[in-house]
Image 1 (cartoon, rainbow, N blue to C red):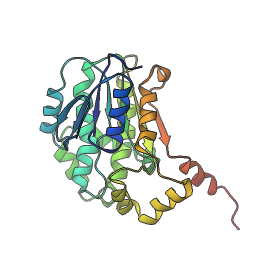
Image 2: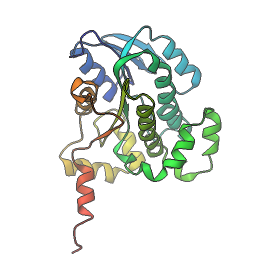
Image 3: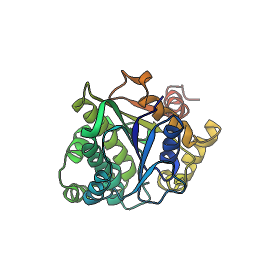
Length: 260
């Protein structure tokens, strides 16, 4: 399905990024992987780069040559890391790499951003998020939220809320040329699942996994990313797909049930 296409996948060394890169490769694409960590036995071109600074993003983008057909922004940092790093990578690294590579994406191509089910309430903070994602100066934007405990104490959630807004903005700015969508997983069995338990609460995460019967596999999420890149999703644009096994639907329905 993707034969002859060149697709960039960030976070390609492990987890969802690695599963996405492998899926595109198996479907015939030439994958260009980007990650700050080395990737063992990577099938394709691999760029080791740190997306936590403007220079790191510029260096990564400069190593992507020629025309590409899509970009899967999977790289991310969990909320157990310092909030500055979480927001730098998850928001500004994604924003700037996309901005740098969009002119190289062929007409009809795609961008898919990895958001999260924890960002479901993002629209309630649309104005704050817009001010943040629009900031030209990374350091200034991070300094601006330094005293906001709601942001610094929930940096992962805030970062993925920002990704939801960025997805809509990027889609709007590229209508008719490049489709931009996001995917919002629930709990996923990846190397950083333990970090999510620390960040969001062990009981909450393990309770969700028990309710669903299992956590998602990285390939479960990669399959949806592949769909959004495919011709079958040719009229899907500016949209988020929740991939949580029905967890949010269950929680929402439970709130409607009469007490007792």
